[in-house]
Image (cartoon, rainbow, N blue to C red; front, top):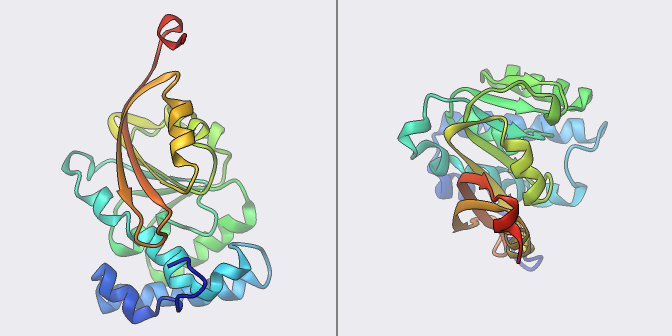
Length: 220
């Protein structure tokens, strides 16, 4: 759906793909309207992406919902969205019904935006106005990230925040195999790949059981 020749995803098509209720859709539509107003003041998302917002941001985030909620062992643990920015994907998932969402964002203005969306949609989230490296240990069931950093850096960020039985969900693009190859030189991990609904070149990575290899194992 990122192909420029394709028409932008409509709100009705988005609802059909995600099977969300009319009530949830109204909240996401309010989110969209506030985002467009704020975008005139600060750069929350790429201006070009607003032309296909329901696909590029809403669907891109919403597609993680079953990946988060289908894991029964982690449903009561916190879900942490690293570098939340404009709230994608964490705030979308909270509006869809995922509980105990923590949004981590170091930019004060973006945190103010996130608080406004939370208030206007009546959705409870915890917003941490702090750099990721300064976050307290939370023992999260799931750590999320979208377009934030390389996979190697993301795994370093997630390590002190993740519960022993937790997992990571990262939205990645065309360089995913290069990033995985680099990470697997010095880490052991279990990786599951799923295709993206919002981008034919995109991948959803579910990563768990991550551990560092010792020096001997890391040598070629």
